[in-house]
Length: 288
Length: 351
Image (cartoon, rainbow over all chains, first blue to last red; front, side):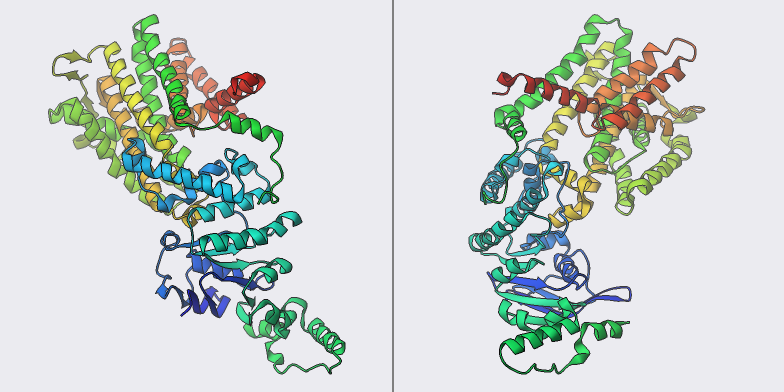
């Protein structure tokens, strides 16, 4: 049994099937990449795992425990943390407060603990502030501590979001396109940072990314989704060679040409693919 | 990770030094405004003539009503257009308990505030399903229902729709009969609320509220129980408005729902919301500034002259409009920005 498993998950919005029979596995400490063209259902899958939507059927297991009945905040408490494709921070609050909010579920004290400065509230507040300082050290956010998140550059926003995730010491991190919209230099630094986070926290990372050099260099296993289905699974090298993946990205004709070119290069005859029914085009037609 | 971020622009460093938090700073940030508040509140009775005690007590009571809007609108982002309804519930409950159940004021006022909490929670429960404008309209409807029905029931408002609400005394030792002594009582209550709210605003629960206001989905993803904090805000909204209502009843020494111009109707609710916006809807000090302006403007400066009331309302309206257009953070935000600019110009002050 793997650390984290998704079994036969199907998600539909009305008649539109966003994910169909998706199976995903991740071992503890693995970095698992999810790739696929736009609309493949990657973010939808993340939404289902983090509890923002309920799948029509399927199971999601964290350490063998079913998490689908749990509310989003309960899943956070179990150690599932995620970032979003478009940053979801709290724009009118400073970076520091954003980090403290991220630590919410590990803190104690409600209204009365706050209003009356009861000891357990104050104690937990001190612990949270200490942790926020530590995390800001890891991600190097100290210069931005008291700036409102709404005033930050996009790259810094991303780092703030990541720092918020780290506050919780999550065991499973869902990263939705961490490199989108940030500068090339920052993207290059992202790989080592994610690896460091994995090593320091012992967390398992599920990563959606379109930046191929980044995700291919980082992932232990890659799943490729297209039109809501997993069309390939394996190491980065294996997935890159899978005809369906090339086809999903480049179209059937380009895939054939590429295959032919590759075959010519290797001095072999181009191998005809066996299952034309699985092309993106026919799958689309079938869905209608 | 140093490579990921560029060096912070020069003005950032300024901000960082400006706001380096330490426990001592932390208290200073409460002590200075609170001392200012107490000075501003306790000086006028000494220098102005007696009538002002009566007026300024009302200003503080309006400030408290506005504080209830700060919690629910400023902190959690739920627009409530019915604070006056909760004020009315608190006022009638407190007066009724004192006049008909012979409860001492010291029990009746907190009880009245507590009675308001479940009423506010009912609204809060509906608020879990509605957002933005729809919620605001819903609160309007509830306010109207309360005014047309609840405040016209004799069992609630007393015979003939009005209940006497005598000023309290403390074991016959301290008498709060006079305007001046009652004013001091109101200052004490307001200071207590300010102290609690200031502590609260720097705590885990308040940050959760801010998060819900800024981004509900994000808050849920951070592990915040959105419904719980919305309900908490509405409970606080009711409690503070109910307390203000109790203070109001005994300030006026009798409470009635009013006929032509309802005492707890839409007009008053809107005034409370607007004075809070004018002062600063996200600051606990804002409503007290706004309340002072509102009361002094409408009840004192222009109350005597013909058409004075209309002129006062117009001036107030223009002030609120200008605030919303140019400084949504209100007069408190204006003051804060001015203070920062002043300190930045004098670098030795930041060190």
